[in-house]
Amino acid sequence: MEKKSAKEMKEMTKAERRAVQERQRAEKAARAAGGTTTKKGSQGSATSVVVGSTADSGFAHQEFSFTPEIAKGANTSLDIHPAVLVIGLQIAEFKICGANARCIATLTAFKKVIQDYKTPEGTTLSRHLPTHLSPQIKYLVNSRPMSVGMGNAIRHLKLEISTMDIDLADDDAKRLLCEKIDNFIRDRITFADRVIVDYGLQKIQDDDVILTYARSSVVQALLLEARAKGIRFKVIVVDSRPRLEGKRLLKRLVDAGISCTYAFLHAVGFALKDVSKVFLGAHAFMSNGALYSRVGTAMVAMMAKEKNIPVIVCCETYKFTERVQLDSFVMNEQGNPDEMVNISTTSTPKIGLLDGWLHKPDLKLLNLLYDLTPSKYITTVITEIGMIPCTSVPVILREYKQA
Image (cartoon, rainbow, N blue to C red; front, side, top):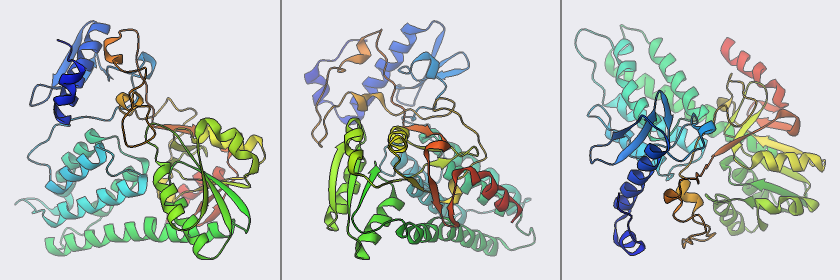
């Protein structure tokens, strides 16, 4: 393919530039591996590259080729509800990010799917609705790999559907399912966050210096509530490229009148010297007590533990999973490698030395989104059922199963 000049690329629309980048990525992968087949979307742009039976994103190192990549231009179908289409695109483009926000958006979209659903003749709602939801779920997975919380919420919804009375009228059944979805959002996310905030307030005292990493919605709510209660404390927000999520948290805290310091991840060792507590958010908790969260979390927790600083994680129990993970490579998610090219820390892009990496056969970029923090580096976990050691995760999962 003919290489586009910088001027030509600048004059193209965002969608056209993305299509060009996808074609270049596919061609690079095809040159790097023999016997490669390229799947094309409806407009001819390469959406994925498959080598044998293992999906290869065209930019990952071979040893990481099994980690899910954020899909671009996921195939759509007439079976996909418009609400799910919108949510899928917003999640894929990170307009909706964060485990709680993604889960609430997904369940809200499924409410609309259920409200518009009509049971075909010759079947029942409890038997046919799961089949109707399957393409909706598949589309969301193709847009971006599901979070652990989303998976747990969808399993809960399917369980509620399977236990519906088959003699119940469709309108009553749909209304009942929508109530079940509302109850899950209220009990397991909204109210859970409020209870976590109440427990967390017990851990914040006057003159504390609190360090947090990136942005967690529940940690943000906790710090704002502590400020509203009149507690005097300072916050150090540690952030990292390429997403710079901590900036959103920093703005909210500064607007609330909280004294803040902003630092990048490579300066966390220096930032920890005056810190009294570390508060972190969670994407998921594994059954072996390991924390699965935004990449960089493990480094913060390990360095804090080395300095005997308490590491406190705020996490709702719906994010607990029976899965066991020992490192960050068994399961992870790849972000767009082009994000690593931009070295700017502001809204104005600034291209660094990695510009043109697609045309360098010996250069591949890996942008992992999450990492794993072993349980030994975590002091306590604040959940809606209380403060627990992270080793109690399997106990909580067992209690929920028996309930």
